[in-house]
Length: 269
Length: 246
Image (cartoon, rainbow over all chains, first blue to last red):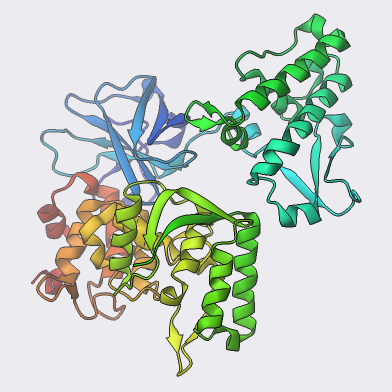
């Protein structure tokens, strides 16, 4: 009748006899965002699910005053569906409710979770921060930009931008910066990664270098060098050149429903 | 009508706006609403080094608004259901465009009263502050509630309003159309087209804040309020709300 129904410790005060759906028996991940929709995956511990005839589960999502619900009549261990009205990168709160019936509903809830957030995969956690980030400094003299390879054996290259320059031109939004300077920065980073490491596996997960390669790997017409190519400096140089060419060609063009640059600046890479 | 293209601040633009606010706050004499201040504002608003066009939207910068409801309705007419919550540059630009209306004027010299920065530059990631922005909230409320927004937006533009701030922070209240209809039924005088007196007064039994803060979360534990008819919700309310039902 319930999903891991837990009698409240304060049962004395629970006059309604509403049960609790234990959090460990259900979780949600966000599989992606499409226009105004959010793609949800719901995982349930079916060993604990015992819905009686007519009973129904309802998954609710709430974000900044936006509400959506999905009714689930035949729960599966893993189910996925879309919910409307959520902007890209929104992070709704979820609540799962067990209701007596859709048709004869008297408005009562049999059991429910508290509000909870979507579970993040390790990869998502790693990609949560924007990897195209600039550090504004006054330590690089008259240079406009410089790559700092001193962090973690070169695995976390930092893009240093002259503070004076950043005051005048907003590097994240200025089209002159994107058109004239950003390609050189990207090229230096890619070439720098290729010359410092002998294989993809040499680079630790979660580092900026790994994330740069993961991003490039998504570009059409480019793929990560294979084991032999990692050993060949010329081939690696060519690959860096190719990647930068793709950036140059596609930077202002549509890439899905975003420009490549917007995609590049998005968090999910 | 002075129609202009809507623009957005870049990082330097937001900085310029912040400096502008700091200056007005630390030198109140600079905050007198006069031609000098208007020129100063125009210089920031249309500087192509720190602003750029935001889509292809036009706006009448001379339009006067009676209250936040009118303001929200006008902006909703422009953006419709577009998600603008994260457009910090554009929302801040709009705040400066209508600066003389979203700031309270005082004294003979029409000195603008400058509030905290988050009233003008939204702090989107701060769930306690995002809804305090003087431009964003009227749009968001209109997007969610349409004509029912009058319940929350009957204040002048410069007054964020205790009501809206209390209620916007209650997700189960603001997102639930059934509850909002209940609140409208209880606290809004349809004949006079305004809130009933003392609807948000803490000392009044069954006031709107008590509904949002205590009763809705309590009932939500037991009842599926998102799928309950309005009459059923009204019947579930404790006796203290009876005086508002008529």
